[in-house]
Each structure stands twice: as structure tokens, then as C-alpha cells.
Length: 69
Image (tube, rainbow, N blue to C red; front, side, top):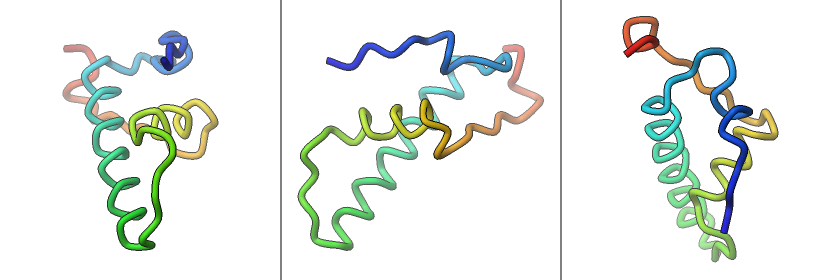
């Protein structure tokens, strides 16, 4: 089970809402890309998405209006 350090993921005053939304969106993209390539995923798409955010492969850009909700 993946248990990432939330402090690393929420750096820069990123809200949990934005993290969850971005992770779900990226996970769907991962599934779609795998289906297009007719590839079988060995890891869960959410795990891959979180790892990509932690590794800096993707960055979450949060709109200013929801930053401090």
C-alpha cells in the first residue's frame, strides 16, 4: 500500500482538494494512454500518478481562487 508523505505532496500551500483532483485526473490519463498502447498496467494508476507528482514529472497548478479554501 502506498503511503506517501503528504507534506512533500502539499508543498507550496497546495490544498488537499487540488491534490485529489489532480491525482484522479492523471490516473485517468494513465489508463487512457495504456489502453491506446494496448498495454497492461502492473501498478494501480493512482499509485503511478502520485509517484509522478513526487518525482516532479508532473506539477499541480492550483487556481488562486481555491488556494485557501
